[in-house]
Amino acid sequence: MNKKQIIPALLAALTLCCLIILPVMANSRSQSAPIIAQSPAPAPSPRLPNRSLPNVVILATGGTIAGTGATSTTTAGYQAAKLPVESLISAVPEMQNIANVTGEQVLQIASENMTNEGLLKIAKRVNELLAKPDVNGVVITHGTDTLEETAYFLNLVTKSTKPVVVVGAMRPATALSADGPLNLYNAVAIARSPEAVGKGVFVSLNDQISAAREVTKTNTTSLNTFQAHDMGYLGYVELGKPYFYRMPIRKHTVATPFEVSTLTALPQVDIIYGYGNNRPAMLNAAIADGAKGIVYAGVGDGSISVQLEESAIAASKKGIAIARSSRTGSGRVVRNGEEKDDENGFIVADNLTPQKARLLLMLGLTITNDPQKLQEMFYTY
Ligand code: SIN
Image 1 (cartoon, rainbow, N blue to C red):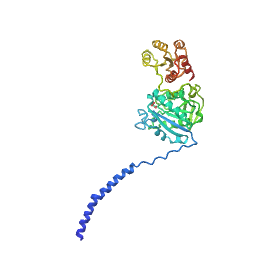
Image 2: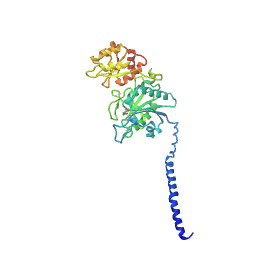
Image 3: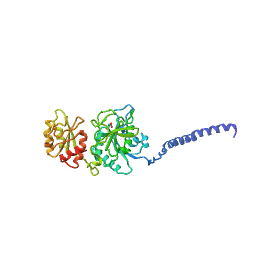
Image 4: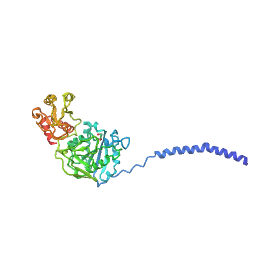
């Protein structure tokens, strides 16, 4: 090959290289890149339980504690019940220093959507878990709107002295100063603690510990919303340890006759609200709809208006349980005070809020519809 022939030959070889070899190389690179990206991340080595630590199971049901907002300042108008239990647990790795924490997703709802079926599902799972010798306590994450109801229901039907703590948050997980992670850590600190055994079901938010029977949500948005009114808190959680100052006296958990393991439904009990110009329409509608019991959230000391009284007495005579509570939010309803309870077969709800009286009346009605026996339950649990 002479010099004149070498230059075209080199040009031809170069062209061939550009047309064939480079695209092949580029193609092979573009194929290999996604393969690298798609190769699975090494599986995290499963955390072995630390045998020196107690075992706590978190049952997640949704609520703001599992909520997410569009921005870090979205503290209203966010979406509740979005994050799964795994995210709640992995957001607080500090919990694993005080307990072996595992989780289950039992429900994923905003708590205004809690149903009797939901209550039974949670309660049955709590009892199954606490029956296991290697489970020391259970935490339930829950929306705050009906948190106190689920807590009191569990207080009545849990068949174990091991700690059960119901916890929520007022700010979603994505918010500035979200309260969920510390509330959850505190709840685990209570659930793992021998000091918490035998004291019934707890509610814990904002470093406070309350008895399920006594606590209620009192403010729409405040972190300090859970208050126990006349009764006060049972104690505080501080640096991963609960400090108790008193015991709940009313019977609970293993000291109640209520058994949910065989129940598939609860008797219908509706709440009727007392107010000026009260008419019997709502009460009659609830009874026509199949209510077996009515909790009347009466004004003051549970007073029933004359316009409604006749229907309430007629319902009671037909065997529908009528329990008088108060819409005031605290204090006892005095038996035979504002109404002739003995004569009319009414029950008074003691100092239970109407929403908690509904739970006790439903459970009571699974055993009896005798007003005297039901009354005794309201004085006992
Ligand atoms: C809910 O109750 O599910 C929403 C509100 C809250 O958790 O604070």
